[in-house]
Length: 258
Image (cartoon, rainbow, N blue to C red; front, side, top):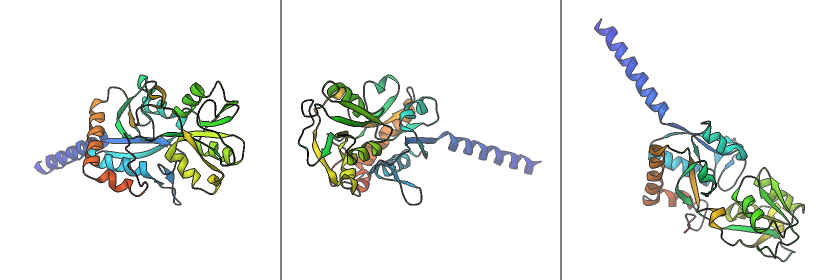
């Protein structure tokens, strides 16, 4: 009888432990598309990049069992609110509009927004400079919102794309005149063979209401405990050198920004 009770107790203990482990598992969502140097699939189909290293570091620090879960960018916030994913770690800027629906951690990087275009054309990243131009942006991004607000009155068209890569390739093919996006993401394109056509035309004028206050981890509203763990983990990897260590593999400057 004692043996049976011991086995039962062990089974219950194992079940409780498994349940606790399962409770700490979180699905980390990001756009299911190449976005180098932040996220992209390698030759074996594994996701790699700066943001993959970042999420691994904070999940390890916070002792969370994280599972990479790529989803379509234009459906990533609904995926979070409907609990298909638990976190967004996908270069999502903290904006007033998004804060109406979801919550964010403290920022984990902040880089400028730029406009790029063909080397043989002279214009800048202003409404006057982009007058009559077709500007490519990725849909459901701060860049789409900014271009519409600041360049919509003077540009010939704000052309929307499902992925950043599609916008970049249309620029290389001459189907758009300019592209607006994050400076680091566009730097990767400019260093590619297709991007040899183009150059940075300028940094757009700041508009915190649209461009936000940096990039943060997206969370569901009300999940205070998880948010506290993420914030503590971001602070810890910044302090203990882990953040700088993996960042040096990708950048020769501090991506954390101002």
